[in-house]
Each structure stands twice: as structure tokens, then as C-alpha cells.
Image 1 (cartoon, rainbow, N blue to C red):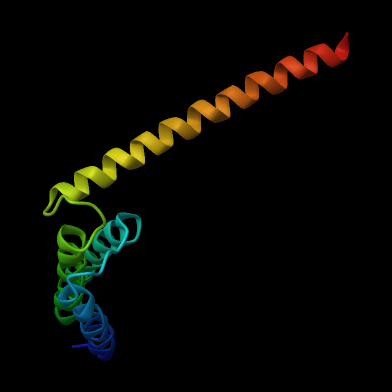
Image 2: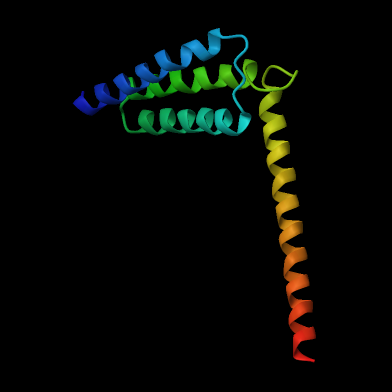
Length: 120
């Protein structure tokens, strides 16, 4: 066992301890824009540590991912609870991306039109 495995485990345990009050607080509302990426990163770290043979780190990161998953499901703003909040986040992300792309394309066309008029 590598000593780094225990250090990463200790960091994960601290994260779990610090996240526990959020899960216990029924009035807490954590934005999906913070909690879904944190949940995903915890899962990716758990997988990565597991493939490196760092079992304790993998278990600790899986615990962090689970805590963030609970926050996603039960402490996000809105009336909906459960795993559907992840779908709500992804849908919102795609809508925002589409809106951003459309507005950026609109600005490019407007800038091009302004440029042509200036050449007259």
C-alpha cells in the first residue's frame, strides 16, 4: 500500500464529513450546476483510483460521489427530487448551450453586416 492512498482517503473522509450537514439540512438548496459536476468528478476519481490499484482512495472518492449524488437528488432547488435532477441539469445545460450558440451566431452576422456597411 502506498502512503498516498491513505492521504487521498483522509481527504475524501473529510469531504464526506463536511457534506453530511448539507444532506441533513432539509432547507439546503445546492444548485445543480455545482452538485452534478462534483458528483461526476467524484465518480471519475473513484474509477481512476481503482484502475491504479489505490483501493482506499477509490472507496473514499466513491463515498464522496455518493454524498454528492444524494445532494443532487434531494437538496437541489425545485420541487423535483431523485435522479431526474441529473436529467434536468443536462437538459438545462443543452438549452443554455444552444442559446449561447444562437446568440453568438447572431452577433457574428450582425458584425459582418456592420462591416459591409462601413465599406460603402
